[in-house]
Length: 269
Image (cartoon, rainbow, N blue to C red; front, side, top):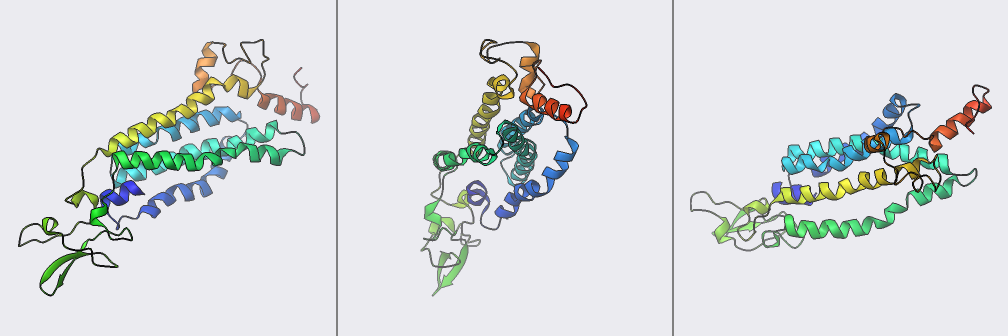
């Protein structure tokens, strides 16, 4: 929201754009789940993480309202791929009766939310600065031109902001700032730098999962390259996109056990 509001004003439907993610996460998971039934969890999680991590690149390349819409759409596609499958994977690890504890532990990342807010605030301050001189005390832009007793003033929807002689332009076309770009005291910054950095930070997430992917999938012991983490092969490298390992994963063991109980096949040793 700060990016759109500071650069395109209060008239931009910021929260409508954000609702792309909300409604996508409400509607798409059942569809994606039906289309990916029977697929190993990390075959879906890894592509989803990469799609979500790379989504800020669209607004970096197109730092405008359209780019923000594309970013939200791509981000949503990635999220509906990996997020439900994370719950599925967590459930496959949990002993009977301890599912709630495992789900709570899996959601513990929410505790780092305030830290993310601090980092985003610092990045906004550097690459997407605010223009407090062109706002009222409530944060609204002083975008309305008012003629009070023959004196032109820029006022907000709530109060008078004082005179903006340099913001009024020439004598024939007086204007008031509707965005930070139009504020005379605002120092221009490069918005794309913010989103490029965010993309780089986001990519660390799927890379970290890939590094420990053999361990997360299970099927290997400590003597096998430290649970497969330090074992290199073509399948290991392709795992960065979600390709299955040549070892049986925890998902495979669960499915094999279910099949054995149904009398279809023998369980894995």
